[in-house]
Image (tube, rainbow, N blue to C red; front, side, top):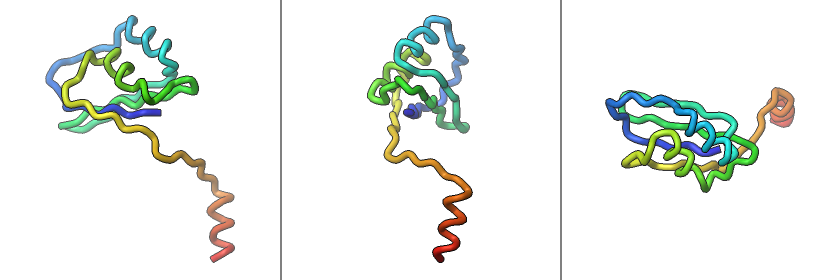
Length: 91
């Protein structure tokens, strides 16, 4: 997984078929668009996706966004209710 943040621009962009092919070749299987009034972000996920190639994935979708920042995972964990119950019992 990787997240690419970039400033919101007034242009409207659409995901083009060529971009979908490029994302698939990079191993991306899921893309989410997130944002607020000032910042937009693309969240790229995929089992075969190398987060080091997040800039390439972002360029496939948006061109070359000025001021883009790439966030890469620092930690990943699963959470279950069983783990919470175990912690409560130990407290």
